[in-house]
Image (cartoon, rainbow, N blue to C red; front, side):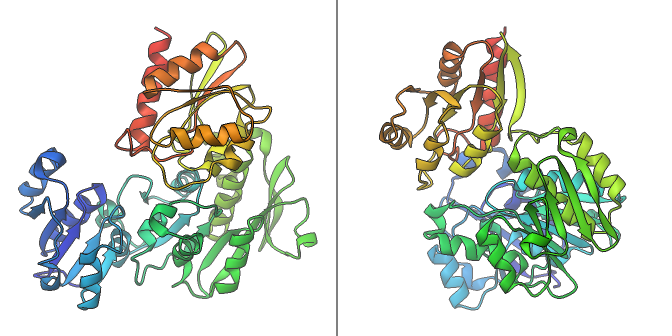
Length: 457
């Protein structure tokens, strides 16, 4: 699509919206950026947009101008059922997500990873594997780097490795990765998607445009993911926890018997790595590693490169990230554990008794399974955020009494340290989003690490 002279509205002054707006301006579009926030609320980004000669409409919705546009690009945080979005679609104005725009401009193969949990770790790992294989690899998407920020630096020999959220998938049109992966599905973001079925449907869009030349990597042990193969028009490769693919009725795939990760695909029928040589903790990270192996194998990466990268890969920031040890008490930052299932995996990964920090913004999640996972693992819980009472009521329901409500994250860190003994660990794994108290999970995790470091001074 030629954007020269086109009128484009970019909705949302977040990083992806700013990136899309600046890119479109470079391509000759007449760009307007809208946001319900005021100029004062947005801050320094306003100056940057003005310097790039982008028109700003702030502090209100752009209802009166949408039908004058040739295209609308939605930032992921903008709900798709807002009146101006519905009016645009009814009036025949195309509405794209930022990754759709990136896809339209990309000259290279795209690898796209989605799922409820493990997206960032898997995307980062795949990015490192392909980075050791190819000359130019861009790791983009929901991982924090907009696709549109990197796309002009790509060529036909490059690879774009993208973490993709359900929000980003809602407004794709032609988006078509060469390799996609769905890692797992558990209830999340129901405050936006309303039902689990809607959430699953959004996730499945990652492979809806793929054909027989493309690949889909699926988690066989997740029944929802397994059934997705019925709707795929591309080649499907499963990963599974098993010591025999054949007993599952599979004749190729990636699998783990608990001691190693193995591949059976094409010319390969061998061990990729011993589990003991992985530096990332937890069963969920074995699954993330298997998914990365599957993506890399079908992407043509030699096994020796995959193995060596797996040996050296460490946890990504904010995902079961080791911070420090004080008085034989280990501290872990899992601020990216923004839903109960992710937080359960963090609890299961710990090898010491846990003093846990949980709570935050209410995404209408159910905390029963999270509380039940505490048994024999969590000795103390400090609760923060707007969902505190809901968590406390669930804890009481299951007889977990050793909790306290904290008025801030800093207070929660101090409370956990006071309740921890030598040989314990303190874990921030909130099971909730961060938006009630922080700008992002990254800010929450960074502050947690600072508060921990302050304890040791």
